[in-house]
Length: 280
Image (cartoon, rainbow, N blue to C red; front, top):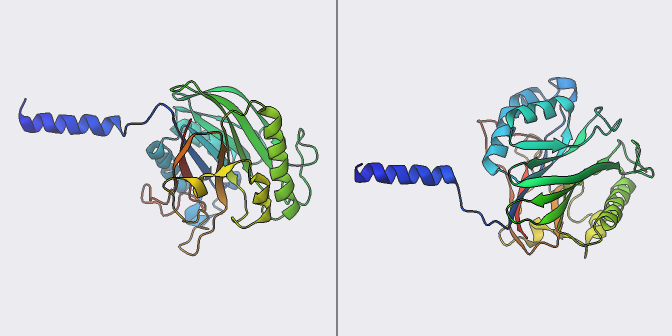
């Protein structure tokens, strides 16, 4: 084999292998996929049928170990499952606890994490039955899971939610309920992650509920950015309303808003996904 051929072979092998990753690292993403109601073209050129391939490409590029997805409809879930065979999805419809309505999905890579337990509850006065809480416009849920990280052997909890976009009390009480449930299910203080579209900006009083209990990856990451995540399918001003909080990890390496273009699609959603890398 010539020297040039050897060099090309080495470069090819390196690109296929991808970047080196510590066995203690966990890649986490939060992504509001934008609900596609009954498969209709309600978003015109931004409808799910035009964004689906780009969304799949983003996942394959970022390769999260765990991802919290919001606003997932049954047919969108089917599309994602078909395109991403290395991932599994858990969550239920918010309207009936089975299939009807949007789902707060937790997607996980079966090669890097093992599912140990999971469930869904409603952000309301009756959290164990499908219901709408306080002054919320819609039923809101949180899906939780307990995982074991295969490379490190560490166990951790993951919670994904979508707070109401209107009700101020629903936002505060919803976060308070989530924290109360976290405290109940995690008395041992295992590493824990909370992702979601909170529908509040960083200055909102609702976030004070998490102060001193969890850390925002955007705030504490060693390498972070200050970009907004909500784009509204436009190039106008963005808002920060999507979050990744965590506790009991040893390090938060980075935090990024994923505004890269995939498959030449301007917007894979009206929210850009957000990503962080945590270390046990």
